[in-house]
Length: 422
Ligand SMILES: Cc1cc2nc3c(=O)[nH]c(=O)nc-3n(C[C@H](O)[C@H](O)[C@H](O)COP(=O)(O)O)c2cc1C
Ligand code: SF4
Image 1 (cartoon, rainbow, N blue to C red):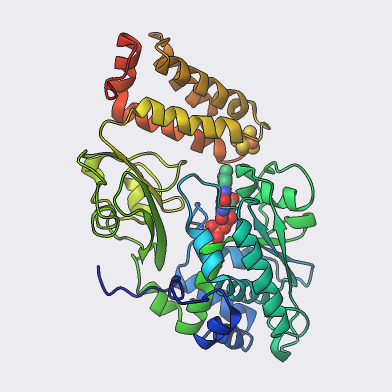
Image 2 (cartoon, rainbow, N blue to C red):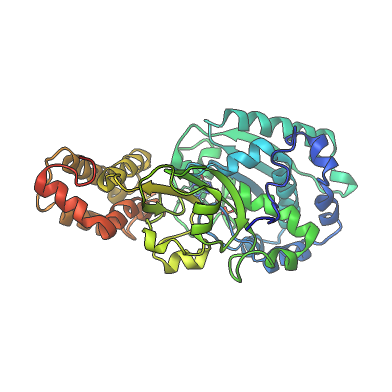
């Protein structure tokens, strides 16, 4: 797939790409000028027609979400979700550090389209460089008249500021993010109502992932048809795939949605790092069920991954080689979810801790014949019974490793040692 155009990462690798002067030299903020000449309806319709879907994990159509924002002249907000907490995901950081103005331009266009005059960046506390880059880029955008009052003489006002999170994964969930931004505990709210109806300070709020917003200037500049010509019919545009684990060249690769997993793994990431063959792939971040080598030709788009029994999630691909204990993989992921559960729902709060205890016991040679059944029961108790999608996500590592590698669990329990790691 050589010669493919990089859209979102077109500035990555250019010296000082984070500077406003470089962004402007490379055609930056032309989409904003164009957007300010368009009506709100025209912009919303362009984003709808482009087929752009959210890149934060759920894949919800962006234009539809813009359309859900009420037209009334009430106070409205935009939030830029820069929490990027999903294990295996490191794509938003790339854009924030190397091309923050492309995101800012997307934020201003989105805010103008939905009639918001206040926007926030919510960034995870660990992104030190990202925070600096955001603040500098926002200051420079104010100085050039792209933010603040009467942007480029259009009469449209927008203020944008940065809010640092304190390291909780759950604050990436949009309603927990809003609570945290309001100074409350970062706990998800019951949905509906969705943030587009009742969000920050109970006002309509558009929450978008960094990568989603970075697509917006390109759609405005080049049109919905151009955007739709990339990817598949229902998964349009390019995607930043972050690949990590036992591969030769881990990193971020921008490719059209629908690219086969095999292409990313072999042609871009260079295949396995050593002599051991591939054992499993987690295709879209820790929350997504794993795939096995026979599924390597799965196209990386929203629909194909669901058909394959998994999800595109954030596009974070984690590659696992033969010789890796899958019970240990499940335990490590469960340690993450048990630690990150916000604790509001009993099935998630207690279930994740209990699953972690059982997995730890199995690995310590203390497994019992009822452990697998108990884990399945706990997972069934969590599935669909929690307030936010994290409950369903947390059980995926256990259920998918059990479905593909049940023999390893059984071996651990029967022989008190690992089948793989001798
Ligand atoms: C537990 C959990 C964590 C999440 N973390 C993030 C995150 O770090 N970044 C993100 O953009 N979306 C995250 N999301 C998804 C957001 O709730 C929301 O769907 C997204 O920000 C919407 O933006 P999009 O439509 O552009 O994808 C998370 C969801 C859940 C359930
Ligand atoms: S599912 Fe878990 S993380 Fe989500 S609200 Fe319930 S307890 Fe919190």
